[in-house]
Image (tube, rainbow, N blue to C red):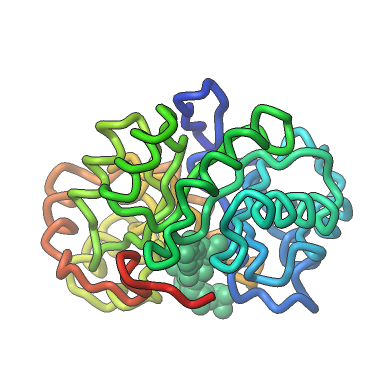
Length: 276
Ligand SMILES: NC(=O)c1ccc[n+]([C@@H]2O[C@H](COP(=O)([O-])OP(=O)(O)OC[C@H]3O[C@@H](n4cnc5c(N)ncnc54)[C@H](OP(=O)(O)O)[C@@H]3O)[C@@H](O)[C@H]2O)c1
């Protein structure tokens, strides 16, 4: 079974650098997809209340037979549940729906600056973490100004910030900012919906290394130090996406992939996104 490297958070806890995302996994098949991912060797499942498949996450975890303590479970609090009381209710509901006693990591899904409740939500996260509802706390889609605010209000930085990041949106500034605060950068939509798979740069590296473009992209994430959470409902692709630890990209490969960055965001802009 693949040995997935761990990253260590500033709070001392560790997390697999490569995990498995379950956005858009139909709740009807979520349990079988999670079971398959765990049996393939993934040890991190990235969920969210918004994905409406937390029950399947828990069911897949139990069906897999992999001990709970070997699996890192992440969930997120959605935009309409910011604020102390609602954030707590959201985390308690996720624990119940997944059917576990403690979450490994909970993220504020988006900052939603318009409603201006993310600082209070972060304070609630610190309290819940201290009570043991979750082991670690983090953010998703936070820009530097949002992070600066929660850090100066509480003295505490998230352990991780999950952001849209792939070869066409390489986010060098956010990665540098996160690193400067000891925050792990975790890449969402890491494959960029396959948009770069047909680029010559990736096709040539894939041909030379005997890997697929998806594997080259995941390996690139690993080598620039990102945590990464690709998704596939297909067992063969789940295995393919995990099989990235037996080859290395050269400095020239990394420089060539760097040229693919066109700053193309396909998800919402965190500074204005406010869908509740
Ligand atoms: N925090 C946030 O706001 C946020 C936003 C978006 C996503 N996320 C998280 O990030 C995770 C990953 O992002 P994502 O699900 O958007 O996209 P992704 O992992 O970048 O790509 C998934 C898509 O690529 C296909 N695929 C997977 N492996 C492949 C391979 N080896 N070759 C060719 N195609 C492949 C999948 O199709 P098949 O399933 O058919 O294989 C699926 O259509 C999510 O599941 C979620 O956990 C977080």
